[in-house]
Image (cartoon, rainbow, N blue to C red; front, side):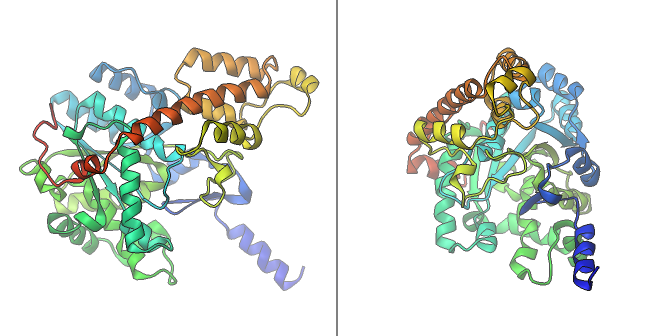
Length: 404
């Protein structure tokens, strides 16, 4: 073996099995993400049926499809949020979006669809952070373009149906300052550079803007960052629904919180939404066929699903009838698991398709119907969102009925 080959082999052996952070999600050799290992590594907990049943009992709301199907599958201190709610103590929700593209794809909608359910179920206020500054720091975009995309993305978020009397949407470029900035500095002073490198994987090549950003995403977890909303309510707990790649931010936040006299934020975390090409693929803005966008026409959706959605069906009808589909790798089944509300219908499709009695084309046809209805409904809602509505959601104002 030559020196070059030895070095290459050593590099391959040293390569981590999976990389999951806010900017990169990948598994070794193009494999699938192992969520059990991720839970162990991050130190969060599995969301079990006991907590889901308890949420149902406390809110009298049936569990959301994302809870029933294990889309939101991990948490930190969610039981404590339910304890507080049961005692009559209030909390608030915090989620966000990094506005780097004109249109959202379905994966982007998932945290907002679920957050809307939580807001309706618990009747609590919500803050939504648009990290236009982060996208300026990480992407090849101008400040003005990041601010424009933040407003465009705000329209898609508002279209999810949030209650304006309980919701404050803010962009970092517009809102940052005052109490929010004071909390940022409190956090920044308590995280060493070595800790930041350990948590986020920063290297000597990263500019200092990136290293300085994590406190910006941390401090919406603290009610004192929003004095116009939560003045005199410093004891308010915070629950953050997000994808699990955002966990590093909040591990850092939870470590710092008690040292600055704040509650640790609680989290409820989701799986990653797979690309059309399969779970090893990545949804990419540079490949429009890797995802379904909320701007796609019915024809676009049909084309993408039929041509690009990875199938677990066999390569001939005879073989398929004999062996059935491999549901573990079938993307139409995975997408239906996210978006087909009817549990009985989903189980029927899985049973028939897995046994070979249902063909790939039939499953894809049902998925096209489900996605077309979802996207059309979102498009109609978004068309009704005016610039004045965006201004109203983003206005710095008290929310007198936020717990009503």
